[in-house]
Amino acid sequence: MNTQKQVNIIGGGIAGLTTALALQNKGIDFRLFEKNAQITYENVGFGISANIFPILQELNILSETEKLGAKIKKFHIVDDKLKYINSFAINQPALSVKRKEFYQLFLNKLPRDKIFLNTEKHTSDFNESEIVISAEGIDSKTRKQWYPTLKKRDSNQILWRGITKIELDENFKNSYHDFIGNNLRFAIIDTGNDFYSWYIIKQKDTTSEHYTREQLIDLFKNYHSIVKEMIQKSGDIYFSQLKDISPRHRKKLSWYKGNTLLIGDAIHPTTL
Ligand SMILES: Cc1cc2nc3c(=O)[nH]c(=O)nc-3n(C[C@H](O)[C@H](O)[C@H](O)COP(=O)(O)OP(=O)(O)OC[C@H]3O[C@@H](n4cnc5c(N)ncnc54)[C@H](O)[C@@H]3O)c2cc1C
Image (tube, rainbow, N blue to C red; front, side):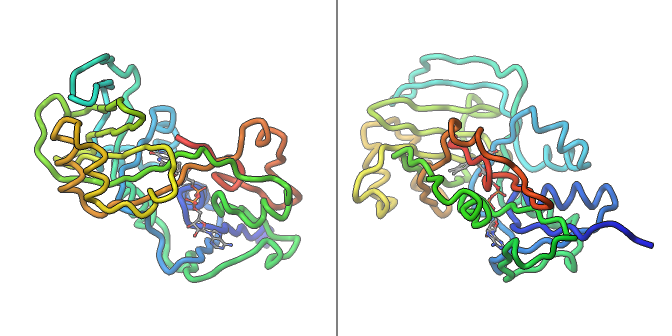
């Protein structure tokens, strides 16, 4: 007789996908529910630090992940004119990949009949004999129900991201360039095969959410021309606000109640 409890994962972000693959590799049956019509992510870069590699190895996807992007071996701090201020080698190189492709890698390994799209679930939809893993992200309804007074923290910083296909000189290969200047940050990260991901971080103001590509370029008009070129030639540009839950409040939270477990940003959202 099969006495294994039904495992239900709510949310098809990176936390839900990782859990699904880990369960599958251990022969544990699961169902994953995603409220959106697709499991995917915006076309942006994704940094995977070296401490995650053993987990990817355990999931049998490390070598495939490595093929998706570039190893980041050097970190450069430069000024607005691309003058090198400080450069150092990264002892344990990180990986930079396209986030969309990384999600697809997981999806390719998971059986479609275990994934229920367009399906919004709540912990109350399951009975007490089932296991529920809430991987609902920073706006987790489960967490809000458990901790109704807990508030998100706004960093008051905003961010734009994109990926640009461009030929850059050798200095940019396997490297992270962080342009520091004038209360603005611009970063260029090798993401493999002449793709470079980039981001802008800026203090929030009342109109910035609606900046056009030209307005973003204008922010950097006094910077080295490579910044303008990266933004100009970029694929779609995505806007985000940086919010989290303060570590002081996070550490007081329980990760589970009965058969329900909170994972990922549902319980420990962090900013960059
Ligand atoms: C700008 C930015 C850049 C970042 N860059 C990096 C990086 O380079 N490297 C890195 O490691 N981390 C990065 N992070 C952090 C990382 O993105 C998050 O920690 C991670 O996405 C959290 O994954 P998650 O699966 O917990 O939540 P999410 O990615 O938010 O996924 C939650 C999923 O659950 C679904 N869902 C929610 N509620 C329900 C419901 N009731 N029923 C069904 N489905 C539901 C949502 O639709 C969503 O698909 C970055 C974060 C930000 C904001």
